[in-house]
Figure 1 (cartoon, rainbow, N blue to C red):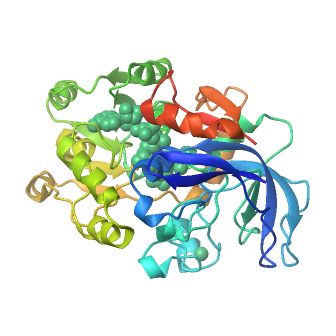
Figure 2 (figure 1 turned 45 degrees about the vertical axis):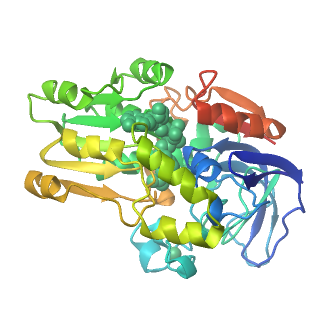
Length: 391
Ligand SMILES: NC(=O)c1ccc[n+]([C@@H]2O[C@H](COP(=O)([O-])OP(=O)(O)OC[C@H]3O[C@@H](n4cnc5c(N)ncnc54)[C@H](O)[C@@H]3O)[C@@H](O)[C@H]2O)c1
Ligand SMILES: [Zn+2]
Ligand SMILES: [Zn+2]
């Protein structure tokens, strides 16, 4: 089959690779019909080379049709239409029972001290072949699927695999009071959905992104948007009676604009031999923290900062005095996809499309064009906000 493979820093290619096969009786094989590129894939493209092998198949936002099931699969049949969550979880361990599927104790990658295995996401997360491919092997398939109807187009459902529940969790973790104000840092696909979910739930949404067309899209869905200027925090504080926002969602993560020194250090670490680079990245303050610092700054006293963007440095410098003095609550983490599906499925099927799932994809191309679209998405060129690949 054809699959999008990682080949090096900013280099991905579509290659002919062996078709996935049933390896465990609990597996299923999916024929992928749509599969998106995520902002998280850009971190692999740019930074996480030391944790990936050349030829690894990327992708963790797929949906498709069940092609084959293992002998022990009872909840799926050939021909079923399914979305595949990006976390691989068992559904019955201590963590899964508590709605913490991204911490699943059955699939945790203990070798690296990581949470649940993920599709297409480095050795840290199990090096499981990903879904930017014609076919995908789904482990523990009885649990790792979201069954959907046959009538609506893929775009209605596709974002249930990751960014929609991620945004929803980010907003839930932000604990916005009724009618309160939430600031959304970053208007990539995740931030777009955080902003829309915030509008849908009746909050006042103030959102920041340096890219004009991303602001325009969020404006159209009811957010008030702001460019990333030097005085952005003051502007937002002025709009919140000088106090700051009740809650802030950081939907940017470790590649934020505005941190040139760390950007250089990140690149330099990526040039080191893999084992050395891994050690550096594990132990140093490696994240570009501009968005997180601004989030902490703009939250009001007693407010919450909820981090959806990915961070990866284990020795980042945080303003503890400020956070302690302001009594900031902090929540974060990988999305627990299945925890939010019962809430989100009716919203994506609603004819009124309250979260606008049909109005996010800017680029829809064959899988073979994926390498070009990685570049376009990373550069935010050509108005690119969300890319959907069709194998
Ligand atoms: N927690 C999870 O489970 C989960 C799931 C999916 C994605 N993510 C992460 O969420 C983040 C966003 O993903 P995305 O797909 O929307 O990616 P993206 O890269 O398209 O979005 C990031 C946005 O932030 C903007 N930005 C950059 N610096 C900024 C700053 N200092 N202030 C405000 N905005 C800034 C960029 O212009 C861009 O629009 C990524 O870090 C991704 O890895 C996390
Ligand atoms: Zn993702
Ligand atoms: Zn589990």
